[in-house]
Image 1: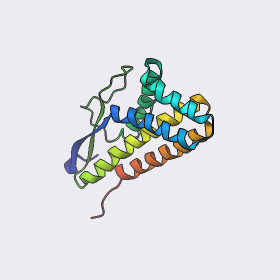
Image 2: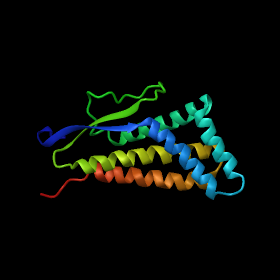
Image 3: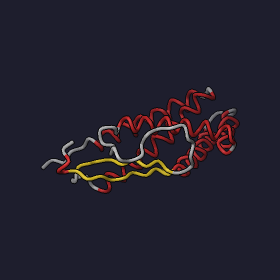
Image 4: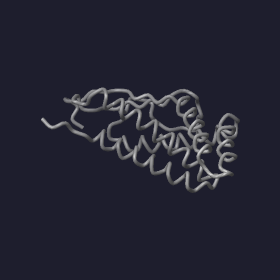
Amino acid sequence: MNTTNTKTRTITIKKADVYFDIDKLSLDYSDIAAADAPVKADRIATETQAAGGERIIRRMCEHRMSDIRQLLQKFITPTTATTADDTLTTGNWVIGITITTEAEDNTLAAIADLIHDYVVTGALADWYAQLGVQGNRESLNLRAEAAKKEIRELIYFRPMP
């Protein structure tokens, strides 16, 4: 990437908000699903607060963030701490990216929101797959992939001169 027309910016995704949204979304799905689904969805929300379930959800979220890092690889600033590890911290995901100077702040905000949505829906889809709730998994995976497609379109967008 040509550095003369670029700037380095930071995207921060709050892990606590991601975990909260996963719990909330799983309970929302239980309200509209079949008779046995509430038990399964309640188990998701309960287990994400317990040590075992929380570790599983965090690993699923880390996997989805790794996918985002791969997607943004061309734009990630080498000096930022974006390397994956096995530490399940409760901090935030921080990604330094280099983008064109024409990129608007609202574009960066939209990318951050889409990353959040991708991690939430993707990790929850992975969790439902583990529980064997296929219908919920498929619909969430479609939402996650739509968010990923929008991220790709926004990051590669070039304003016309």
